[in-house]
Length: 104
Length: 104
DNA sequence: GTTCTCTATTCGTTCTATGATATATACGAC
DNA sequence: GTCGTATATATCATAGAACGAATAGAGAAC
Image (cartoon, rainbow over all chains, first blue to last red; front, side):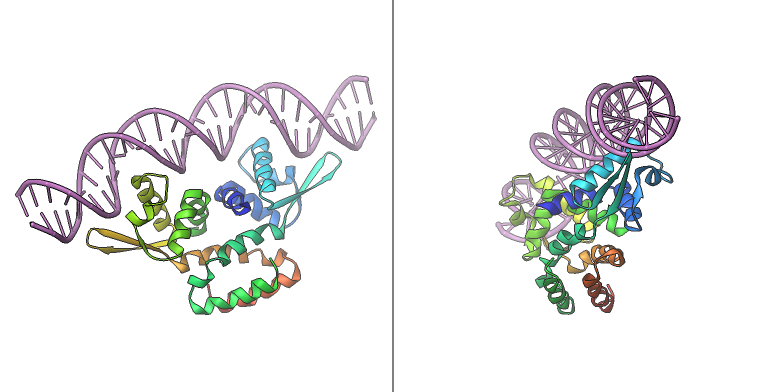
C-alpha cells in the first residue's frame, strides 16, 4: 500500500510545496530552507516523509544533502487513479492504453 | 486549491475504503456501513469530507441517502500530476497530449 | 587534533483529526 | 398527530502530526 504513504505525504501543504520546489530542480536542504517559513528540522522531517513515500531521492555530497523529486514516485498514484477508469466517462478510457503501455 | 482537499480526503485509509466501495456502485449509507468497523456517525463524517472534496455525490430518496463516486472528482488530481510531466522520462511525455486532449 | 557548517534526530508542546456516545433532524408508516 | 428508521450533527476523549528548541553527528577547513 505505497499509495497510502503517498497520499499522506502529499496531504500536507508544506510537503507539497517542498515537492513542487524539488520538481523544479535538485536543491540542497539549505537552499530549500530559504524562502520557507518553517525551521530546518521541520524541513528535514518533511524530507524524510517524502523520501519514505518514494517521492524524492537524496544525493550525498560531503556535508551537503541534495534532494530532487523522483518522477517514478508518482507512478503508484497514477496506477491507483487508473483503477477507477471503468467508472469514468468513455473518453477518458484512452488513458488506459497509454498508461498500460508505460508499464507503470 | 481543490487538490489540497482531495489529497487530504484520500489520505485517510477509511475514506479511501469508502471511496473504493462507492466506485463499485451507488450505495445507501446503511449499506455502506455494513462491513465497516466504524460507527454510522463516522461514516457520515467521512462522506461529508469526500463530498467536500468533490469525490462523491449524494442522491436523496426519502429518508435514504445514496452516494456514489464522482468520476470527475479525480480530474484535479490528474491535472496536478500532469504539472510535473516535464520532469518525467521522455516516454511518459505522451501522457501530456492525451490529458490535454481530454481538457481535464 | 579544533572549529565551523550542514543536516538529522530527540524531546516536549500544541494543534488537528478521528471516533464513539449522545442527540437532533428528516422522512415514511400508521 | 405518534412511532420507528435513516442520516446528520454536537460534544468530548484520545491519538497522531507538526512544529520549534536543543542536541547530535558528519564532514570540510584549518
